[in-house]
Image (cartoon, rainbow, N blue to C red; front, side):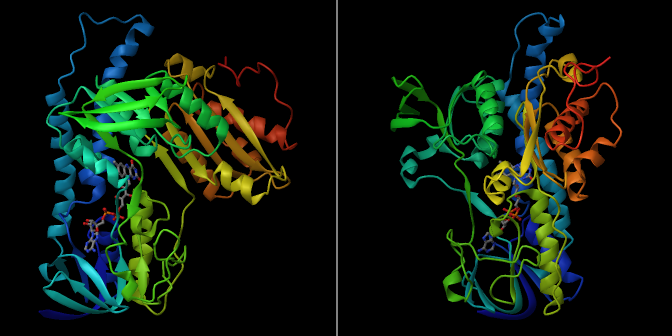
Length: 483
Ligand SMILES: Cc1cc2nc3c(=O)[nH]c(=O)nc-3n(C[C@H](O)[C@H](O)[C@H](O)COP(=O)(O)OP(=O)(O)OC[C@H]3O[C@@H](n4cnc5c(N)ncnc54)[C@H](O)[C@@H]3O)c2cc1C
């Protein structure tokens, strides 16, 4: 068995692992990155990028179908060539993976190790059965994987996860999506628009990552116009029938329904990859999900020399968060024991369904819990249904809720479903990180006619409710479609 004595060992070679490796390398040459699977990152191989490629194809179909609303008609039927769709998804996906691999190739061979890492103790790692590493500091950057009930495995290859979708050569006829969360909504709606028959089921009533009941209710109604979505379904039975899956469920009218689908897509959440690290051999403190607890600003765990970053930390499983956390954890592992608090930006998240869902800053639930139901905050509201530019583009669906604090007038957060939500969310996140008040945000320029004017209407509504600005004028020119 080979033995190595290293300053910093990084477990995982995904986005967080690569970032932590680079950050630690700025302090010491003695850094090793251990990867048990293929390089290329979850984001590029089976996550952010291939999902957006599939969505882009679906959007093009949707645009054609919407064209008659403008008086524009194409001749003949729309032909969706599933093979061509999947071919482009995979081709472009491979390009993105290729860019990552080029970066990995530039890392010296001696700094990379293949194999599955497990803890022997707070400072020692066993890599498969070939290498033992004694590391002064360790960064856990092991990512996450899909989580679903074990009994579903009885469906065999008819049970799929996101990874499988991006390996398809052609599109199937029908899919039942379990889990109307971020991944379920994105993939489910895209498949539906690409001609696949989709039904979507959830348990507990949650739709997307939203916490504001009114915004969530709007989302549920909107998606139901396109495909059957029951976020709190009762499934009677689900079993393999030859090359298909038969599902019996109670519909919303409490009637028993039977459907047969080609595949069941498990999009029921992801679990951090920390359960196969033998953390029980360390002094790491774990939370109720078995994830090592860590300081939000330093990413240091309860064991001084061990840091954690990315999806493994179970803080915010998003790409930009993985990169930020990696920079902080890697930097601190490199500079240890002189550790520093890193910049944690205002929270921003987006779901690339249509209309898009986005959230900024504190969630409705967090604010409501923090204020203990004391009514210390207000909600500014705008509907996009009559918003000028949104109507022009026939994208007038959605609602935006902005939250502001009584007394200070501070902008606290936002939840929305609507057109261009990814862009509105950036605007709002920048304001949030700058600790702006609602009045200060209203002092900023707004062009005309743009969807951002809807944000201004919601800000005015919020300022009035906070008793900082004037009452909203009904049918005011630039609050409606504008002049
Ligand atoms: C379908 C989908 C769509 C997504 N879309 C978006 C999006 O639009 N925007 C967004 O911000 N985020 C999105 N995400 C989330 C984003 O992809 C993740 O937050 C990000 O990739 C996490 O990076 P990571 O480095 O923590 O994990 P990974 O990139 O998964 O890296 C972890 C690595 O650790 C390795 N590993 C695990 N255990 C061990 C071990 N014991 N020893 C050695 N190596 C190990 C794994 O093989 C893996 O390569 C999406 C995710 C999915 C699945």
